[in-house]
Amino acid sequence: KYQRRRKYSLSAVFHSATMLQDVGEAIQFEVSIGNYGNKFDATCKPLASTTQYSRAVFDAVSEHKCGVISPRFNMQLKDLELKQNNVSPTHHFGFILLTTPGTMEEQTYLYQSNIEAVKSGIQGKIPANQLAELWLKLIDEVIEDTRYTLPVTEGKANVTILDTQIRKLRSRFLSQIHEAAMKMRSEATDVKSTLLEIEDWLDKLMQLTEENSMPDIIIWMIRGEKRLAYARIPAHQVLYSTSGGNASGKYCGKTQTILLK
Image 1 (cartoon, helix red, strand yellow):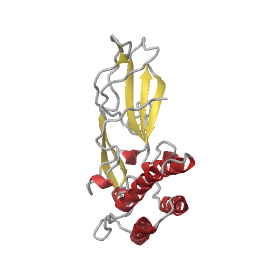
Image 2 (image 1 turned 45 degrees about the horizontal axis):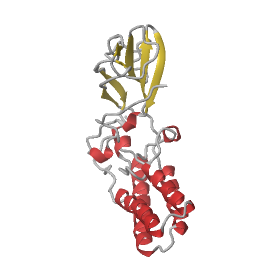
Image 3 (image 1 turned 180 degrees about the vertical axis):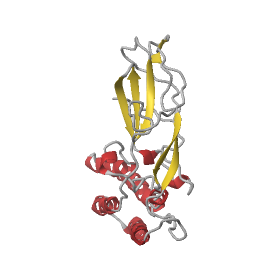
Image 4 (image 1 turned 45 degrees about the vertical axis):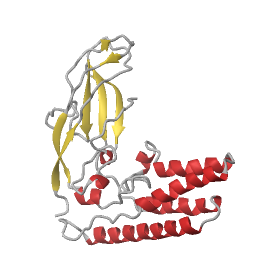
């Protein structure tokens, strides 16, 4: 009952590929998620997951470029709609609550960056008014990001008692953090003394993170039958949600510059 599968579509457009080395032979790019789209995996039927082989072009600024290409295909995965939507839409405060320790290495969250900015300001002994501006920016983003109401679970298909209880727990934590941030903003007199509590808020949120059970998206550059370089993108960062923009991945429908390694 709770293992229903849903069809997902993955589409990607490559506007250009630059800074290529040793490009005498034709190359192509492959986009895959799990086994789907992997041209060398015989367990899945072939999909339109690769670009056509093409040779790089040398232009006036000494860059090698490939043209515009658009792989796209469908796949069947475990239905994750409720799991994906039942999270906090806190972009600055560590979006999404689906984030796992692995993906934490790939993104420096704006929330954490703002904490570091305040710490650097304290260590650098910047003027009090500048330090106050950094602190207010941090607190205002916390207040803004914790005021949202989580998507309701009532009436949704395949909702378990655990799903409902987790939503209640997350909602309570977000409400508590929101109230504490509002109180801190109006009463705090010393920036340094507030950092420990603010960092504790982030720790509490990360304890509530949903395990990301959707496979990562892998982009491969291939020459002949040899894989040369790749990039890994957590699927939830580009996942579209019908619940609205706040529940969609932060890179959904947006152009990115991706470095392959």
